[in-house]
Image (cartoon, rainbow, N blue to C red):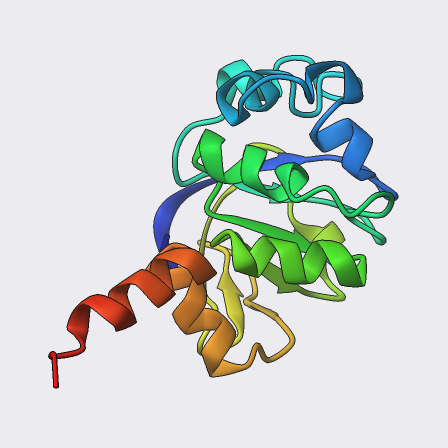
Length: 169
């Protein structure tokens, strides 16, 4: 994953209060992440999992990721290639799970201004979303260590990189 995107990031919109059961439905939880991802958001956007392209972004209303602490809810979006989720607010557990699996979350009070199908660019380190032909939107600052984790592909990948770079004593 990357903390910046070119103007190729297509916006997919969902409403407020998207819970982890909608992202990783219970009926699919006995399967691997590839199957879970195929059912991601099927209750609110049946076409999402089959239509989303790597690098696309998901824009939601407030309270994204509420519900259970299932890590698969964030992993399903990573599996589908979603570059970022942009919302006014996130569940605290979902926020941490997302960064742990390498999913970038951008908190923006102005997320609702982004339109379905719009193409945007974003720079998480600079805290902005660029809309070609429109005003830039601000995002809340994200600590550098979390952005580094996303760029590494998640916490596990980051730790593997650190340990592989160490030289034997």
